[in-house]
Length: 433
Image: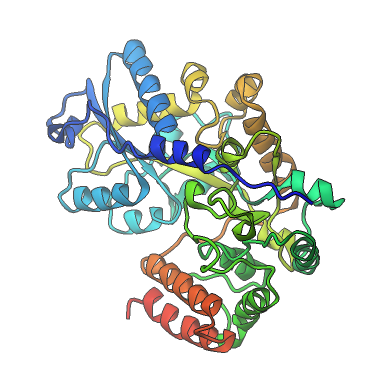
């Protein structure tokens, strides 16, 4: 069978588009936005690609026309963004409105760096009438609401449907890990394509949820034995050939360098990978003409426990803002304005407001509509509550996990060695030792 692979040129185009890291309108002097009490001037910061950058700035320009408030945008890539926010927060000079992630929100709340939105929800400044209680509570930390979801998303598995159709293989949602492994072996034996289940440490969350060992201020479970099957499946997949190894392809967190869409040698390609469902457009864009990329649930031993709907990201207000009410009004616009979403569409996930989601559905691309259907009709009906927010030390623990996965992939560690080190060292990191 002729193997299909993704064009490097398409990927390089995406990488080039994402290389832009700031707006020309963002001068260093605007970092403090409304700190002097100017109610007609705010700052807002976000991370993302150039599409998000352009759409967000257009929406902010429309907001100025509507409200008279000028919002200076600050745009960064993911890694640069959090370094900048940490520096700004330490100097109490954070932008008035910031894009926030669930892996960081608790840390910012614990340090008193975000504004509690509860009073503004109660008095109607931030209208949540068309947002479900579950979605509103996605931003709840302790007794306060510190972020409003920009939209909803879910973790998923992307796969090359064209390739699997040629093999006569049909992927069903909510498949178990055993079913996935059987399919992976068949695909590898018949085509040489491998799976990328263990991608950037992302699979651990699904495994931990399925086995009731989610991390809080420490790893769940009683011992390293609770994590041994996780590393054993990886070890077996490498030995049997169906899980791709680092020597065969890059293992990164970015779509443009994902082995599913990057590289010229089809022997080094994968037929599936895991990521966030909102990335469907990026994967489809990177695929060559005639290749269909589809999405499904991530296979685990217990799909219902593993599946959950999550905020694609949040909009939060800095505790440093001199204009909290104006900042919250901007959040309300970014949450409830149909004019804003005619520009933003579903770039930040399925809109949190059901009224907005319905209003713009016909304007979404086929991929965005597919993502919305996946989140609302596949994940939501067969899922469990969101996991606890990440605590300080979680980033270091996740970095450790990735390094241990690499060692197992290269054969430098056995599954037992990886499980032992992960349980011991990650617990120290989560407990601040």
